[in-house]
Length: 83
Image (cartoon, rainbow, N blue to C red; front, side, top):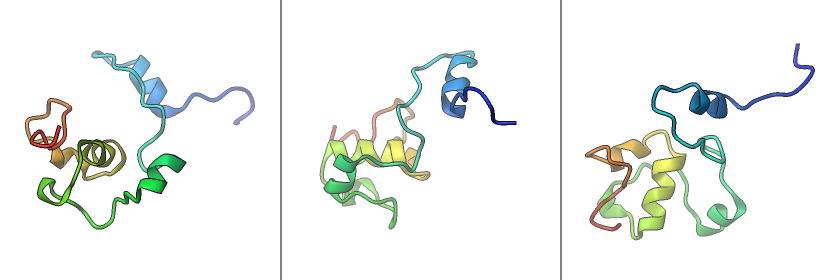
């Protein structure tokens, strides 16, 4: 069943979307060593007032299931007062 090549679901969706956007390099929830070193974690949930930098806000936006709540106007920019 899984013989052959495999395309990650997020890449397939990006290619077959009516509004194509570049696929993210990692699926949600998977963090790099650099991000791990920064100490960001999806638990507990954060609000913009609890976040100290634009990098941190963008990490939550891209890696946490609740991160979209940091982008109230849905323009792709989290915690606009920081960014």
